[in-house]
Amino acid sequence: MDQCQPTHQVTNCTHPTLSHSILNPPPAISSPSPSLPIPAEFGREVVSTDKAPGAVGPYSQAIKANGMVYISGQVALVPGTKEFAGDDVESQTEQVMKNLGAILTAAGSSYEKVVKTTILLVDMEDFGKVNAIYGKYFPVDPPARATFAVKGLPLGAKVEIEATALL
Image (tube, rainbow, N blue to C red; front, side, top):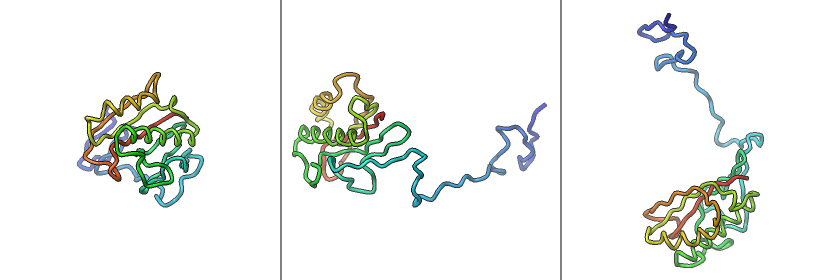
C-alpha cells in the first residue's frame, strides 16, 4: 500500500524520503556566522608565505583542508614587490610557477602532488609559450588541467594559474 496519501496540503506522507514538501518544508539548517573562525577540528588551515606574493584582495594564498591544498590563482608578481617579473608571457609564466612552488612548499606539498590546475590567459596565442614552461614543472604524469582565455587579469597580468594538490 502507498505510504503517501495525497491531500491539498501534502502533509500526510510517512515515506522516509518523501516526508517533506514545498508546503511542508524540512526544518532550516542554520549555518555558522561567517565572522566566526572555523574550528581546527574541521581541518581548515590558511597557508601563507612571504616567498610568494601576498593576496591582493580578500582571499588567502592557499587553504589546506581534508588532505588537500587549494592554491589561489597566482600572477607573476615578484614576492615582496608589486612588480611583475617581466612584461613577456614567458617571464610571467616562470614567476607564476615559482610562486606556486613556494606556496606548495609552505603547505607541505610539491609539484608532484598537484592534481588539478587552471590556467587563465589574456591571449590564447600565448598557449604554446606557457605550455612549454608549465611542462618543465610537470615532466611526468602532469595534473588534470583547464585553460581559458579571459578578457583581463588582475593588475594587467598576462597569465594566472591556480592549483589543487594533495598534502
